[in-house]
Image (cartoon, rainbow, N blue to C red; front, side):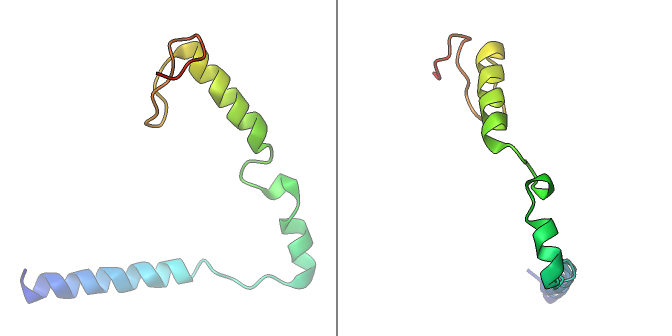
Amino acid sequence: MSAAWIHRGRGAAALLCAAAAGGCAPVAAWERGLLAQPQMAIDPLPMRSLLRAHVQGSRESAPAAGRAEGGGCGCSY
């Protein structure tokens, strides 16, 4: 690789690190209670979501997210 490509790669890595660090912000003590509520979670009911995904995968027998699903009988072959 040439020196120009290495320099571009380092610049891109530095830019990526700067963008990622910009997303970090301190949270005040009185705001932490609001952020800890179940409604603020990405998936507030993860067990229900997993169950629904399993049932739908068993019914459709279609591959979802790289997994092999069963044939509609509930088995996972």
